[in-house]
Amino acid sequence: MMINFKYYDRQAIVRNKTNLDDMVRAVWAILKHKSASNSNPHHEWCSASYCGYLQALEKEEEYDHTPHSLPTNIMKAIRPVFEELTHPDVLSKVVNGGSQNANESFHAMLWSLSPKNRYSTGTIIDFCAAMVTLFYNDGYQAIIPVLTEITGESGFYTNVATRRLNERRVYYEHTRRRKDPQKSKDNEKASD
Image (cartoon, rainbow, N blue to C red; front, side):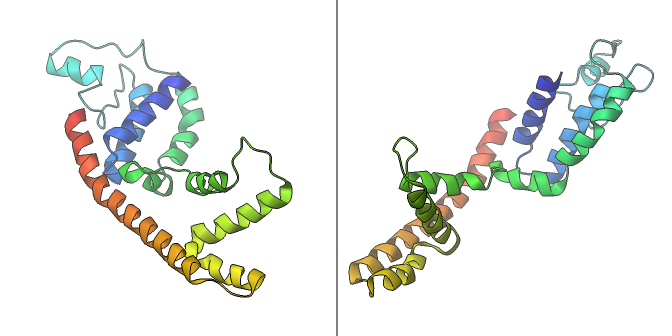
């Protein structure tokens, strides 16, 4: 059942990734749906696309909750997990298909400087981590004062290269953000 909850949570996020309120409701609908019983159905937030109870209502048929509902004590035990999962601070990170792991980009930059498949000393890893922290937080031109401190000066081509790297980074970020709303609209149409 935990694997099913994981799958349902993912579906709720993917289907509602452009609207935080709908995403929160869809995740809560999972808990309400699984805690429903024949005497107390909780399907007000469910969608007829997946809810057997709502589909049975449309066909005017009887529906038995017994095969899929979980005991009340279990639902009370897992409720804090749903409260944590549906907190707006958590779900706002995945609106428009974003990632909850902000470190992924940082790690990608780090391992591009010091790949995992080659041996590097601790000093090299520390140096690369410091450089990536500069790049990640302040852009590529933040390295110029460091190079000036080490070598005494920074060259013309170093300044040009770091400026171009920053411009390219900003350009690709703007391009990605411009495409994301269109991509999410296409995904909505496909899921409908």
